[in-house]
Amino acid sequence: MIQKTLQDTEMMKLPATEDNPENNQQQNQNQTSTYDVAFNVSDADGGVQGVVITLTNTTDSTKTYTSTSSGSAGGCSISGKVDAGTYVATTSGNTGYNDYTSSNITVNKDLTGTDVISIVLTKTTSTP
Image (tube, rainbow, N blue to C red; front, side, top):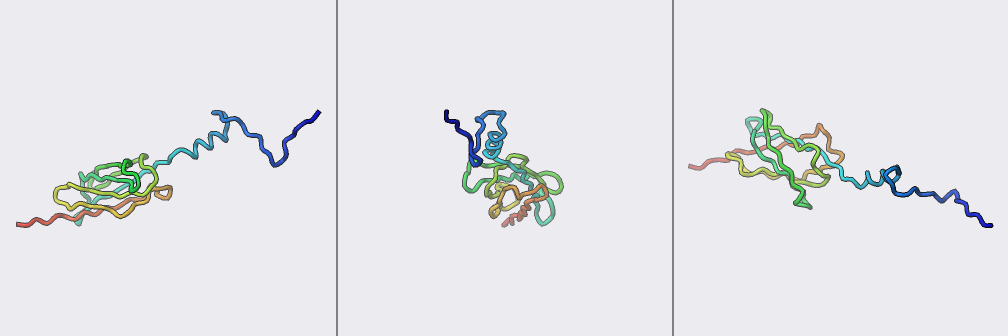
């Protein structure tokens, strides 16, 4: 009678079930992390309210998020929704202000709750 034994270098794999911690670890690695992104919108006089900010992924334009500035500091945030990646923040159509487009913003695990993206708007000049 021949008996097969496991060598020290071989490992017995558990079946892929909900109770298998190895399977759960793999599922967690496949999940996409989302992040909070905070903004302060201002001009030369201070915070600006009512500005709609659009955050658009540079490689996947279907990943677009919006928020509206409020309060005296012009703050706003997109909480727990933004996928990791590179984004551009824009504002447009705000009466009295020029349109704004940011340089690339990297959203990942290094973006902390204390990081705030500052958007400084310039007022339009009227011509008589």
